[in-house]
Picture (cartoon, rainbow, N blue to C red):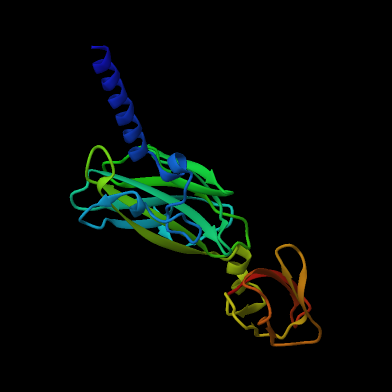
Length: 264
């Protein structure tokens, strides 16, 4: 009888660990990035296998009820992950927001029930805390500071067919990239006496209506990057790295302007 109780206890303990491992996100249970990002430790299919149908994963960024393709620095958004696949009973996910150089971009926090944020190697990941029957997960995302540039959300979604264990599962991935939106003073430049474009600009920024003088361009750290004297109808920006910059210039009427633009 004692041996039977011992074996029963051992079986229940092992079952408990199995349930825990299959329900927790990879960040908390494995200390691993399984998103498929450039810094990931492989993907979910390394541990989960046997699934017949590849689940569909979609990711969208919402400002209130509206989906957006760009973000305003410092603003809060809802990141919605959807995972669906025929024959699966449960779903999980993991996501990370990275900017250029695979640097963490913004702050992810838990949103809907069954989600959480974990930090791995100075990067913040969102993932499930327990499997979802609907496959819809919401996270809160606070956008990074101005000058970060485009942000990519690398997301892995998993469909699980069995109540216990990793057999009968299959994963898929999705990358959502959003650009950094221009600031309010960029949007207002058309109402000013100084009009310029294109914005974003790649090589040459043109001034419309009046030539400008004493043209200075600063990066977001306040360092002067371009200084052009005399009157000009355009200025070359081809040597600037991609990012957000502040333009200071004097128009033909002698009025000084300070406006932002994006160099892509």
